[in-house]
Amino acid sequence: MLPNVLQRSAADHIPVLADEARRLLAVQPGETVVDATFGAGGHARLLAADLAGRGKLVAIDRDPSVKPLFDRFRAQAGVDVRFLRGDFALVLTQLAANDVRADAILLDLGISSMQVDQAERGFSYATDAPLDMRMDPASEPSAREIVNTWDERELVTIFRRYGEERYARQIARAIVRRREEKPFARTGELVDTIKAAIPTPARFGDGHPAKRVFQALRIAVNDELDSLEAALPAALEMLRPGGRLAVISFHSLEDRIVKRFLAERAKGCTCPPELPVCVCGKEPELRLLTRKPVRPSAAEVDENPRSASARLRAAVKVD
Ligand SMILES: C[S@@+](CC[C@H](N)C(=O)[O-])C[C@H]1O[C@@H](n2cnc3c(N)ncnc32)[C@H](O)[C@@H]1O
Image (cartoon, rainbow, N blue to C red; front, side, top):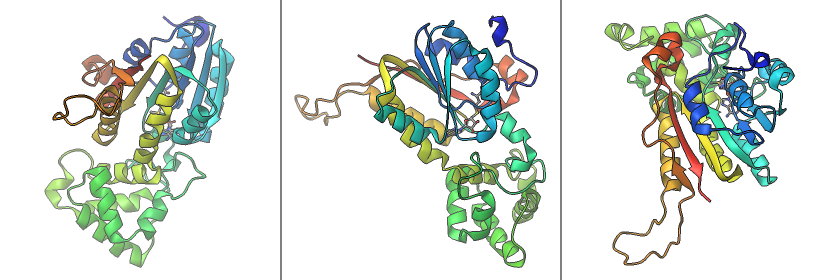
């Protein structure tokens, strides 16, 4: 049960795998916690409650529109809190370089329901809006720039790599043809082009026909996978011995990066098996807290369908 001051309001985003993340992060009073993806502050509110009035919470987000939510959170948090706006890869790297240390770090990847609901930001294929998709509106490129200027081959690559889109080639070709007549400005134009480019039966199977291309564009616009690759070692460096890292991902591309990173850093010696003794001297830096990813319960998916694809992995930094 949350203390009264930290009660949720109806407008709050429902944090995904919240109990599980909280249990794995096991925040204790007096500790320093980093929520690297503050969003609407759902997880931050719970982690701040676990600090029980003593400790520090550093919140990071690249989206300036979360700042008013952070200000509201600050007024209620009951602990020392700080907001750092920027890409978590850069912010965590800078914090680590400045010897800031943490006992628990959470990354809850992707976009928030709040961002999806801000129709004008163009994250959703369900509403016609300007083609944008930037988490940080000051960053480059926007989805509009990618769709109108990247060459056909680059479009095929991102649709395949980030969207696992079967009809990547056909869609990229249709986009290039369409933009020669009139550049894309809105999500609706892109959705119509995608629908027209794929075979009729494919328009009705496996979710919305634009789902995979929108995912691919969002990942490319926000350089999400490179950010994650850079953030994980920085987070590990920031952790004190005994500190916990938890990452919630929403698709297999992210989960693969997290899984591989945690497994590599949890492994000790990397010498070839034919060597009789270890010459690399490598010691494990992490101990896995989750052998398999933690998935949401059926009840959570019922309550919050967005959680369906979530996977949580966690590890503790060894002494
Ligand atoms: C899934 S939401 C987090 C929701 C949050 N845990 C909650 O309970 O309200 C992800 C948030 O992280 C931010 N984000 C995603 N990638 C980021 C990055 N590379 N650097 C900083 N913030 C990022 C997004 O802007 C978004 O607000």
